[in-house]
Image 1 (cartoon, rainbow, N blue to C red):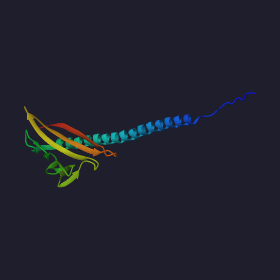
Image 2: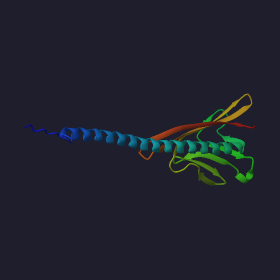
Image 3: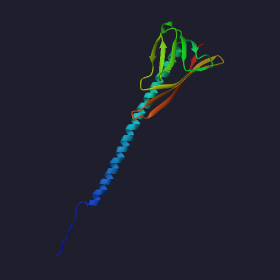
Image 4: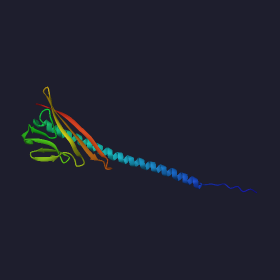
Length: 166
């Protein structure tokens, strides 16, 4: 008589291989999900900087639209301060845009207002007054910097040119 034995189930080596493959798969998924969260946070910060930059450019353009006279910078020079005399005296005798403590500020009627939000730092603010063949313009440029939640520093440069009615 012969005994026939059939083995069913997994050998120890099969289980070890399956566990190793499962660990690699879980590790790969974990890294992918982590990278997705990191890039999402950085994208949110980049979008916030873009929105903030566009808002500040709009505020600078609004001040330029109010200008009856540009006192600083003088023609064909650059300055870190924009000083205008507005057409409408109800806005005050003068309006000043400059940086103070890494913030973009607007001063009118002796009241200084911070224009940017607290998550953003403003640097490299420059106003350049160009004149050429009866065309007057002011180029405004600045840099915004912020930190993403993971600590990554994100920086973006902004500039605009406003043509003046003189």
